[in-house]
Length: 421
Image (cartoon, rainbow, N blue to C red; front, side, top):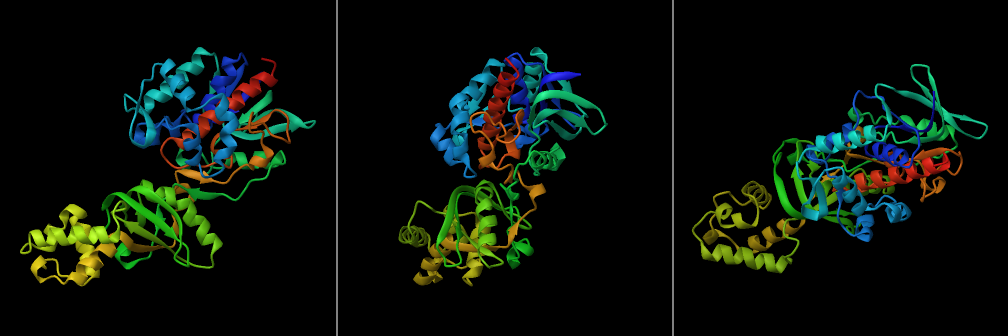
């Protein structure tokens, strides 16, 4: 059996690639080694599926620090607004939440997956699950099809590889596509975890002193060994039993990986600012005002408006202040010291959870070897790559899935075009 286009991988990039190729008229086969399609989509956005981000394209690309500029050409043909229109045409109404994140009104990722699969059925895409690919076939300097792990061969002069990276392997992303890319002459840049929690050997972390505590709207800053800021992100964070997590920390993680690789050090410092809109002086004045207003109350109650009680008690302990200390018995210098801690408490981190625990894989097929307009290989005619297998990575918040959809669309359209449609 032969097809015009074979798409390997049933994640967001592969589903969009198959839809785009079939929409253009190509006889399309979608192969996935799992028993169901869209497994990563189903768990994305906490099971709600953050379909895209509504930010203007320039801002969107700034939120894809891992080679986001490569996407300009693909986004000019199919951008985030086109993604929104695509899903609404499928009957999936979307709503915008904080930071531009777009979710289905149903809050059900499954509704997005079902709409995509129904679209493929309507376009007569042949879908085969439990169909692991052993390798992509190349002959005479071009792509000729695929060989299945079961031993069968399927012919196609256009093959789109959309098998993801190495993160979240339970969804099927186990790095299979890197070997196929290498066989075609491609370079795989160093793989590393991104959008991943950080680990720490700090005693208070190991003793689970703050485990489960969330801090809202904080600024977290990665510091170089000389104390200069490398990168700051502002959002929520979470203390865990092994280190730090939460959206602000996840965004910082790829810079932690690179800093630990760049500098001859075993740990890097993460500075936490619970009041990024206030200067140290202004925060000191707020603390003083609260203290003077109720001098006979315990500090943990007086200062409660400025931080969660559990965090306040922890910081007070760092200053050797008893939990029941009242405002009347407080030295002014202690108020200044508390302001400093609220602005600059620092945690030493020694790395991240492994790539398998990351949301996104950093690194991948080198973009120097990929046509940014078509996602086609510069080395092997008829071969395309899209989604997370490429050396592209963004922050959580709809940016990675946008990259997957737009690169999948570009690959599908071009594969169909080269197949004569």
